[in-house]
Length: 126
Image (tube, rainbow, N blue to C red; front, top):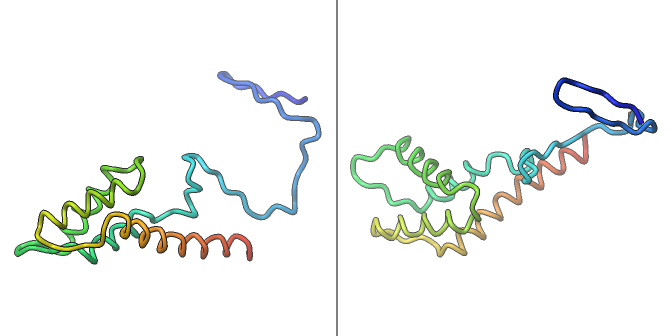
């Protein structure tokens, strides 16, 4: 065992630890979501919501997008269905119609899965 010490910690490495020249990619997952693969999920959700959001007089596109992003990020860390329920309620309160929260979730997941497939393919082919 080889030890490396700092002021606050000691790391022990097995003596058999050696270089791995055959590895070309490494993904660090700090928050449990494989972040790069799911990167951009708020924009994907925001774009889906925008398709059904009934704008009212005096609202501009940038303001709408900021409002939707702020609302969906306020529920970040919870299951995505809560964001879908929030949005469906918002649309209903404005007199509009949107898919059900479950339908919104299915469409969001379909779009996100497409981005994940593309990124996974990049990892596998590079």
